Length: 156
Length: 286
Image (cartoon, rainbow over all chains, first blue to last red; front, top):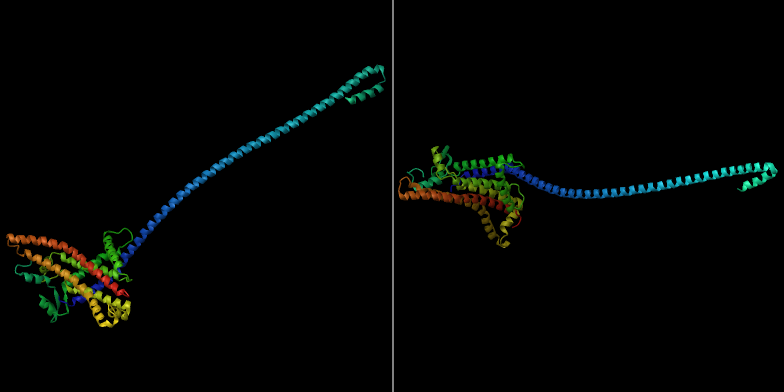
């Protein structure tokens, strides 16, 4: 136990070591440790977030698919309905057109019949008059009988 | 065992003698025994303690500084891993015991732990290697374990004590510090008793801190020396001497292994008490 100036030397050396350690050793290492800790924490958080997002998007994709399917079947149903509507409409229009053509044809036929009747009546009257003329040319006053025949012809 | 001419007591004395050098009558003189060392007075230097502790401190700071310079948040290398392991251990200890905020305490604790550990570790070098080595270079004696020199342990503990006083005054003020010493544990009218108790308590901190480390390492070294003495006469072959030689090897091994624990434990205790004392200095009340 011999205390001498070594005590002071050791104390000064100790102070210098502590100062150096405090200045150049401790902060960079602790800083690196803190940074790494933060990086790992961030990484884990990002991974969690990614996982969550993946779940969400999978759910969303399923929903979208479902919606798309629903929409598709809706569109198909609509198209089918529209197709049958068009067919019905076409049927209706065709029937109307057919009816119109039939009516037109009937009217024409009636007209033709009437015309034919008129023509026939004229010819019959002429024939009758010619016949009667031949008969009466010899016997009776053509004038009196002609009036009578015209009255008969108008009655036809 | 040193040369044959030494008696056991001379051998022990030789091993416990520091290389104390001082300026005497105008030139440097190194003491050869305890009396001469005493005659050099206060202004002498234990060159062995000084050099070894300086080299050990430099080694510690060199490696840690190298790790610190290359420290990155990425994948750490081997050295950085090791340094980070130590630093995390120190940081956990400081966080556990030190409640105030002071950026100096953790680096201080690291320095204390690493330096004391390395100084203690010198005790595991076989007891005669060092002295024989320096003797070959012409130096009469050399103690390789700085922590067996009270100058080294007191140098640290008194520095810590100075910090304790500084922070006590800074945190509590002169009045608060005095109140802590004078007004408890007993009521105010027993002020002298309080002062005596708390004063002794305060003074005991650096002394116990230094003497605990010194005592443990000194005793440990003493036992290494005594074990080394056992096989001293092994050169003359006889059954008894062979047994002694064998026992020396076994005992050295056993004590050496046990000493690994003491080396680490004493460094840890010194560090922990440093943290605790500084924590107490930072506390406003008990």
